Image 1: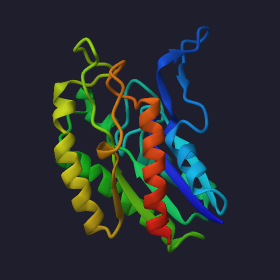
Image 2 (image 1 turned 90 degrees about the horizontal axis):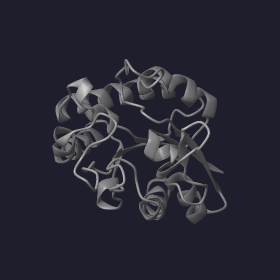
Image 3 (image 1 turned 90 degrees about the vertical axis):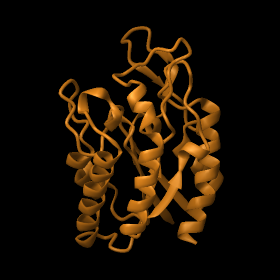
Length: 218
């Protein structure tokens, strides 16, 4: 059984931009077989176990002063050791790093992901997964909402970072001997909020990612 850990943010969790819980106001979540990790699992079939570890607002290394527990570096060890052993860790982070309040640019985001990968490799060396593969995923680019506004603290500056982040993530994958996948070439965000993937985008990403996983794991 091949085990795959998907470590990401709300687009790994499956945030549905069209629905909220009418009682709590909490954003709805796309169901299984729609969100990309489970859609990927459906395509992979028997012999693969996909572990979904998405958390809304998660960054690579930044503490969000307005929301607890969003720093991906600080929670990496708990998540990794909970899932250990694994054969592949897929990391799709960086979108939330582009929020205005963090004052980042593509190079800073690259360094955040670099630090995350370095920590993961240290954890792997002292685990049941010393030979696990790592895949860095460039997330789908942000866009303005249908009315031209922005949500969740993003801005046009955030949108403009997309090409730079993709370039640096490709460079990082080569430097750290990781695999690379470009989700931006497959899936688009929903104009409802300009941030979260459409249902069709999740399904398409799941199918494409399954093919990549088979390539990586043989």
